[in-house]
Image 1 (cartoon, rainbow, N blue to C red):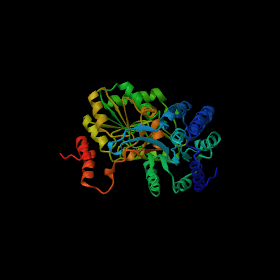
Image 2 (image 1 turned 90 degrees about the vertical axis):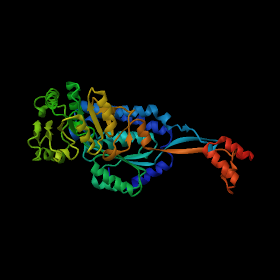
Image 3 (image 1 turned 180 degrees about the vertical axis):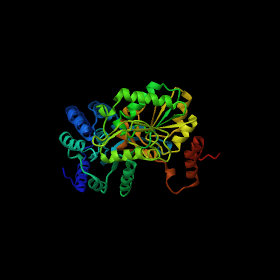
Image 4 (image 1 turned 45 degrees about the horizontal axis):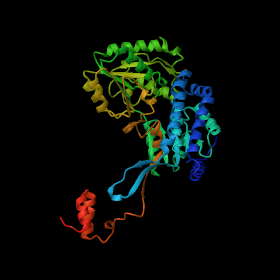
Amino acid sequence: MSLDAACTVRELRESFASGRTRPYEWRIGQLKQIVKLVDENQDEIAEALHKDIGKPPFESFISEISLLKASCKVVIGGLKKWMAPEKVGTTITSFPSSAEIVPEPLGVILIISAWNYPFLLSMDPVIGAIAAGNAVVLKPSEVAPATSSLLEKLVSKYLDGTAIRVFEGSVAETTSLLEQRWDKIFYTGSGRIGKIVMAAAANHLTPVTLELGGKCPVIVDPTADLQVTARRIVAGKWGSNNGQACIAPDYIITLDFFAPKLIDALKSTLENFFGKDAFQTSDMSRIVNLNHFTRLTRLLDDPKVSDKVIYGGERDEKKLIITPALLLDPPADSLIMADEIFGPLLPIITVQKMEEALEFVNSRPKPLAAYLFSKNKNLEKEVVASISAGGMVVNDTVLHLTNHNLPFGGVGESGTGAYHGKFSFDNFSHKKAVLYRGFAGDLGARYPPYTKKKQSMVRCLLNGDIIGLICALIGWGR
């Protein structure tokens, strides 16, 4: 579908200005239509995800379809309460008065989504934008063309086209969209493109939410349950889109004496999950395209790590498959340790003591997620207190994503802003402060001329000196 960016924004701005998207009935109706969209098209959604990234049907259901439905139902259940003004207290300076915080929609929202979870990461922010009463343009990733095309078809069929549009295209179309004035831009993807989005938003002083990524560390303490730890790391790394996920474990850091045991447990778990020949498994996504395949092979072919691969890493370029790979102690200046891996390669870094592990993590940009496996409660408290990350999970990986009571978002280079559950509603709302006063109780001391008596009264009032205020009012000195 060919769309003109300026025309699209103009039409949606007119629709928003009409008040169409503000009523509770419109919002809840659109949210229920999203649930219907998912229920009636699960097979078609899974098929598109398989075409784009080779995602196994069960993984499509667990990590995209079911999560989106759950997200929508949480918002449907809480929306009426979230929309209600929040009564707050007032101060002596405005007495008598009342006050409240009124959530209001921002206006017309641009959502630019990612290719790795092309259905979930497209529609989940749309849910928040609709819930907050906004008009929305969704720009799906062109790297996942089957899902992008399906989203355009389904959104135009199920949702209100006067206020919700899908805008397909590649770099030129995205650039055209970014040239327009928006009331908010929500972007999921790489930090490199995030900088471009932020720069474009700055031209109109448009607020942004950036859901980026980073090198998510997994700290493994020798007190951890070895088998459970290995299963949960493997599930979080290779069961999450074959490592092509912003919250997938990017590297492990553990004590040197414990590393051999952990490596053996990881190898055993990988073979139990995906077989001795991982090329034959049907339970793992492929690399999304040749560009990313080439990027990942470049990491493996770096001369600095050629002797560091201790397991896996076999390649099939035609099928876009790289088998799960473990690397032991790649140099800090190697390519694989420089940027987010976003693939099936997992370095293991060894240190002499846990203090070094914390120093290593804290010496790098703040990650989107950090993970700790340990039975040591003191270490748990220290890690939670000392490591800054978008989110953290103790004794598991990635599951914080599924809890809608937790905000999901980055910090520092891993992003800005958060969403999920009520946090999605808040993300796309403005919290408007409203103070109500009548015409009685007008204190003359606030108006000129500022006589000594008035000044005394105001000082007593602002300092909370009630006795002094009474004395000033009746003309007694103290």
